[in-house]
Length: 221
Image (cartoon, rainbow, N blue to C red; front, side, top):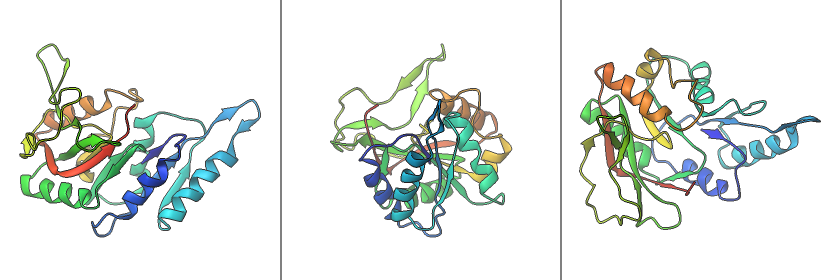
């Protein structure tokens, strides 16, 4: 998870991660820091570290000087996580997965023999509102969302389906595939890195699947 100047709501994010029922989860956080004329604001970053460790004592926390961008920091996980096997769950700091979300995504990844799996994303303050269930792109390369603004969740998207891409707000990917593809495109620090990465996943012959049984709340931008 990449953490960038989180608010009070971040404690709820941490609680949701601590409650995951998937076994053998290793949580890795990259905490950005402010850099001003006086240098790096270490106190602010250390305060975030304290909040993380209080909620998840086994977490690995790396404080980063400045803010290199989401994609470059996610790619740093390849230096922290050893081995080729296993799964990598990419997350932004403004999501709260349901306790069974990781388990549901992992189960679907193996069942569907997929390379990438994404959840059903609902609104933070009103989980009856859909935010995303994957996405497509049209022939002009424009993103074609599958959810209308303000659309209510009435189980209309609850079938497992292939998608062109799923968002990096919460994306489960096979670690060996992530390494093979070289991670996210570092030249795309934020917005668009999900589409570009999933495009390469398809070119590699792997599937991108949405598992709606995995539910994740996301704060509005």
